[in-house]
Image 1 (cartoon, helix red, strand yellow):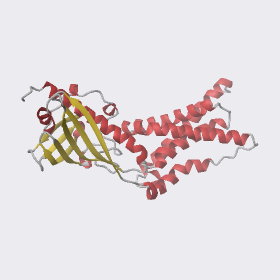
Image 2 (cartoon, rainbow, N blue to C red):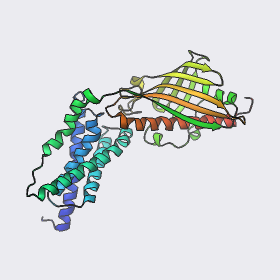
Image 3 (tube, one colour):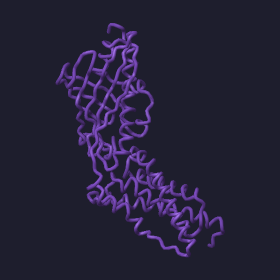
Length: 331
């Protein structure tokens, strides 16, 4: 059946988007069948930046060489193709929602850049009477970058995040709420974008004994457990602890392998509460944490890890504030 003008345009749009998304899915599938191959490593600049670029490039190339499109269509089709590829990896359980959300912003920008480059290149070649385009180079670019970047870009960065809250309660009351944290009801926790995308809620923190050397066990939903060894104990002033999370004990259904605490790419190292008395009898409570980020793109990854830690710390401080302000003055 011969398509009319509108039908042909719709078919070209659908075909270009599906081809671009399918290419992205195919490259991601390479990691599933050959996870040890550097060319298919997921936590690389080749995957998070150059693969979306190639998806956008291929999408626009397919349609533009057949039918010229306005610039806004280059950007739109590239965005749709990248989004479809990301959603596809989640649908087939190759990626978790957390990783998909973190990849999306940089993937969209890179994808639209790729689409714009392809469209501009084809228009330039068309004006000169030729349409040759090194498509093979673009298609293998993510694999080439992933293969070599580990030797150049791999890095380890330790980040510190601070959260602060003012509490209308004296320091002695607040101290009792942080040394041990009785079980937290979900209703006590404020809404959280971090929890919405898959990070588990805090549950409770027990303490073996007071003083340096005491062990806190901080439990989170989904079987996540942090073993926290006290290394700073200044009653009503400072409480610090080193943190160990056994990545092997965290169920794979709780956190995506690429964001597992204690894993290859991310770990939480140390936490500390600092209580500051306020002039009118209240307390300013500071919560610091140090975490490790180990990727080829820490300049982007740390934006997410900082935000996640700040979101989690802020929720914990709200629980401490509300419990402290409800506690009897001399409890």
